[in-house]
Length: 280
Image 1 (cartoon, rainbow, N blue to C red):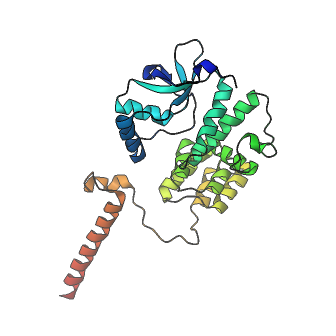
Image 2 (cartoon, rainbow, N blue to C red):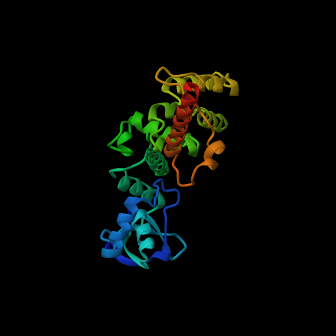
Image 3 (cartoon, helix red, strand yellow):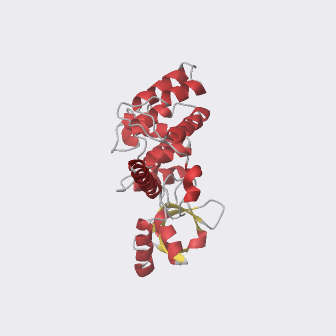
């Protein structure tokens, strides 16, 4: 890594000259945590300088570490932020970006997946081999996960965004998600439609069968629907009503849970009326 000693002290840089690292894997969410960070930046400023590198052929800089702090500074109305400027290549910057974020307390599966992939590609560009995606040379990627686990995370990058979001939301576990990643995009889209239609997610057994059917070139839409339509051992009978059929009957502020509670209440009231009428 080439570092200019004259630039190792923080300098103030205009926010207008700062650009996010292209393709960085970390999500910047306007959630409660961001609200707290924005308030802190507004009251105390940026306490930890950003790390940036000069963008070739421009007077701007690419952010390596500090995307969330930069977003909070923008929300707080700051015009400039303190930053450490490193004269390094994009590959070196990619490795630094990943390493500076992997140890965060809260990191989503999708973030870790694309972070490992970004670092692996950067290492390859530098001529460093990572074995079978990190098996023997896994220390080049991380000390936190085994080489096999790294490989499993990188498989998630082959999923369509909607399925990847379900993993981040905790609705699909990592192991079945890895199996689903071997399906082509068209099959994944069909799977997503079936999941929405049946209000279900694939079990590990179903995910493995879908993968095997695809690899055997026997996976068809009817076959996929048949596998996803199977009732799981712990699955209770459920009445499924498309939300678009009933949403208009309830206030816009109602959540799905509130709508369900209201439907049950109306059914109970109707049942009481019918029972009273039959008892006359």
